[in-house]
Length: 498
Image 1 (spheres, rainbow, N blue to C red):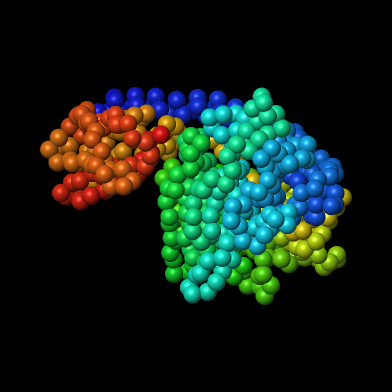
Image 2: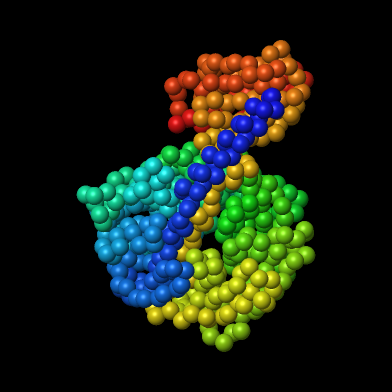
């Protein structure tokens, strides 16, 4: 590609991305400002409200069984709705219109008995990118399946339900309910999501049952795409199991904390959606029946709890295992106050639940500080009501675009491939460039859809080393661009049109 054209293109795209990022993320989004913590539907429940990043605690009454639940607020921090995977209640603590019977053909009769679904970190809420008053709830369906000849209980399908707050339904209405996203055999524990590098779309990670394999779903323009299935291999890696999966706030890492396999850290490319193995850290302890993890706000430190102990890992160090520090051990002062699940809060602290039925939360007051300076405090908060083990789980809603990696409108990634190919997408054009050869003589291009059908397209030469493809066909969905060169064979990449 000619140098002046390349410079202008890069500057234009970079300025557009930065302006896009400022418009979307000029104010802090407060979707996770309200945490609802409870137990049986006949008991009172506790609300954590982080208005202005200060924790306020109050009590409310709700008929919902809340062992496991997820609450969502609007962008300004006002509570909108909450769910236990079976029902959706509005902010008046009443059943939302059409908000019952979320599970279709579920096993175990959880919803029939008005119970919570038994999956920690098992639901997500994504605000619509097209409509300010629309939200998408991702929730599981329970089931029995066979793995290696043995019957297992887990999740057989993930649904989405669409919740709207239009002028006619100020308290919310579920317009679409139980629409399928993906089917299979899944753990049910530890789904998480991370902003795409364009700052607009979302990556959703869903772990397979019993294997080191992850499903990646792309949420783009209010549509779910089953984007990729990846299996992670390493000589030092055990099976992930049913552990917690947490993206770092900057989206560069996925941490997987498993009961027996220790904690695995994967690198993540927010642009391409690719995971790569970095390291597995084990903890020489007898009691590892529960392993949970959470990142500090700056993504440097990862905290891991193993029931009776709390550890800190420094991801800026290599190997990570060399940075392992024991922060504290359970003091045994009060039963049922051992260390459980963790969540980073809007006030920058990390809150740690107790195991079993309890009224205590532990707190890491300064997670970004090394070692004991993080100021971990056991039973720092006594709740006014009981809860069981649980703490709500939220992604980083405020992660913006990464202008060094992706283009805001592009779904083809800017990636270096063999033979020094560089591929960009700009709106409805794809630009391929290389300094290795004369494209007019050597390059052959093909576009196919998800069923393998060839798609007609037009192309034009920009220079001896760059070519433009016009995406002027009408079809929408997933497509594959294949480049063929005799010297380096076939090279393919995936892109979307919606």
